[in-house]
Length: 318
Image 1: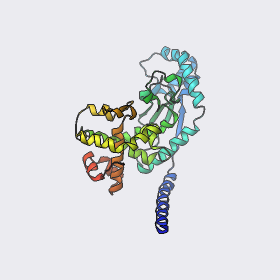
Image 2: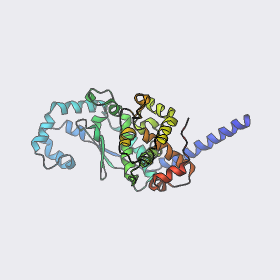
Image 3: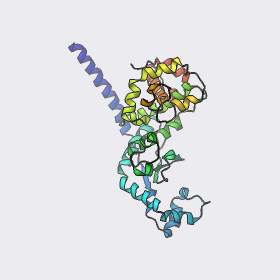
């Protein structure tokens, strides 16, 4: 018994040491994130400041809109309230800067061709469908969409959406944007292809978001993530028994892939389940594939879904 215990401890120590060696190498990656607070600049601007603002931030002032539109927006009480709430939540940008630099150290370690962007924070009239956007080398983060799940601005927005409108999800959303640049869209239209596509994205987030919970990577609450883990075997059995894997039925995406308040098995468990369980299963398949095969990260990203599934030796946890 003592020999077994000592062996297990040795394995654990070697594993931790290997992981820390990678992290030590990642720490050597030099990343400097510059954050421009357009939300603050615009929120405190006067009409006479508009010409200079347009010169400094041309992307934020489309030429088809007359100056009167921007002046009216500066004076709008809702815009002033947005600015007040954002500056209350994010008076300083140091934490966001540290979090982004940590993230881009990891991204650049695995993908040296990617450089850290210029980051501009703004407000968006709570456009929760576009919380973070990447244009060329400019990353725009709408801070009014990350004020906290229970913020009064979010009344009327579905709960499954607002649960991710909080500070801890900024890095997850930015990670998703960059992962989508690296993971090719599947050529096949099968349900399995969609699952593996999102599984690849979530696997990249495993490598990049090493300080984050798995629930944050997929956008679940802790309780939803526990439910998915505890019911993984039943979810998988349902997919297999209903012959979903190689189906091209487009309704499967809305039932199991797309963000939703719950997944639609059309069973009693529906109300207990989180949405996106297809993404969760795809994640576990990709994790199993990488565990059981000696392939490089770029090779995995371009491998087709069926080959990944066949070689993954995936078995759901019971």
